[in-house]
Image (cartoon, rainbow, N blue to C red):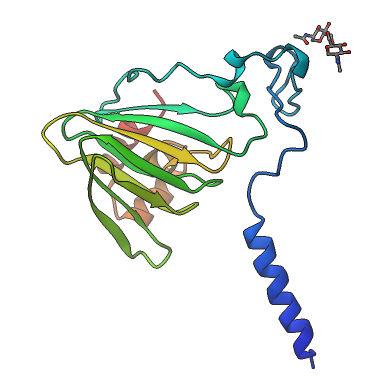
Length: 213
Ligand SMILES: *[C@@H]1O[C@H](CO)[C@@H](O)[C@H](O)[C@H]1NC(C)=O
Ligand SMILES: *[C@@H]1O[C@H](CO)[C@@H](O)[C@H](O)[C@H]1NC(C)=O
């Protein structure tokens, strides 16, 4: 028999573990990554005595980038492109939508996202692990939260362009788009045909659309 207090402590521990599962806390004021001297696995801080205000300002999302075939332009600003974010546990994205433009179902394995509508009307939502959907049209000035790791999506539901600013509680939230992960990654045709009830013609159409270009 397990003593009750042990079970209790176990749940406290579980709870702590869950609430602490985010980017680690910084151990210094900041650590601007030194792009020249860092590799993928080791990020070195630039000597802090050489830091300037420019290290803490990012100017790359004043305007939208290139639009995808689904009418979306998304520019992610992670610590990889904004070295000043390194170790600070957050990052963001600017997303612009043409009229009717779509951000396909996707998820961020390492972060919760808040999406603030700067302009327009956006049908926004996510699906929980019971496949329950939470979706509605949100307007300029409204914010929606997409819980960490859950599949979410957006579509411009207005008759003018829309813009969103998304914020993440990780400097490297990760992004996995469902269509590309499923049809563009090289999973065996036979498996995909069986899993989705597709014939080979239907499958090759999807693979062509979502495969690497
Ligand atoms: C990068 O490392 C080299 C050798 O380790 C050093 O000489 C150089 O000053 C470093 N560059 C910066 C920007 O710190
Ligand atoms: C950082 O730069 C200062 C001033 O140039 C220098 O005195 C110091 O030794 C440097 N620190 C490191 C760790 O390189």
